[in-house]
Image: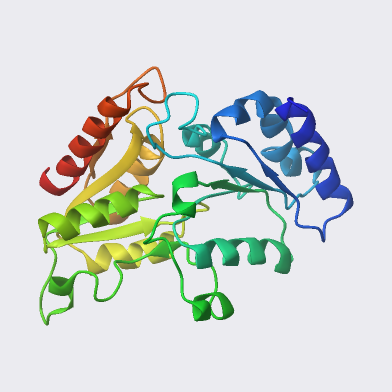
Length: 278
């Protein structure tokens, strides 16, 4: 059925009648979720506030700038973040298989039910670096924020060393940033991932702020400046870190993405260079 609104409405209703069921609605591409915007606005985002009805439905929205053009790149992350208030929904942009598993497990195991919106780029299904050890599935919990992995940046592990730059990001752009760092060896840079954007784990982020106090703070994203998490996260980072973050990403645009693969690659190269050189 080529009606996102009809199918999502059915799945939402199903999740209300069967609260112990893991109900997942996956869009062919996240871009098509706008066909179900009425259901998202009226029910998922506001249902608990209006009618005290809770749902544990999961939305998997393929989202990621992979050179496939403006209709196959963006789940409109910014719109979901704009809907966030009063702990009504959860918005995640997850980068590891184990963390994705724990997010789904948490959705079923805990007592509180909230819709979970996941930006789920298709390229991470086959990315050689997007892997997890077996013990990461069998132990641990969902990590809302992932600090710079131990040992990935050797200079950060030396006694009394301190990075001069902290890049914060969310989603698959992390792998582009990590690859750029490996190739160009800017050893004074740490990269921290926000796996869950809302509710924002402010306590953990405050710990990150203290750990990297005094560093140059950069927010890097794939999306255009008027899209993605930038407008939503920037004032919160300024409050927690005590300084304004610099922006590394695409320029503001009316369209979610360019239609040319060559231009897409040029934009990606530019935002990576900015992230490490602003």
